[in-house]
Length: 77
Image (cartoon, rainbow, N blue to C red; front, side, top):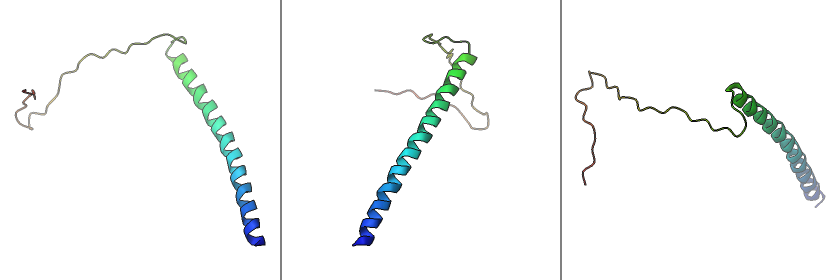
């Protein structure tokens, strides 16, 4: 009976300590991630709240000549 109580006590102590350590490492990780993201936006010369639109021009499809005939798919209803 005493062994079971001792196991339960040690188990809850280990879980509690692991929770504290995990919370500490998560806080450090999120702080570094936020700092990295802030530096990433500063490198591009953007201000906070500024909208950036990336140019998305359509590119032509490139098909190797050895593949064979290329037939563009078109759905027929």
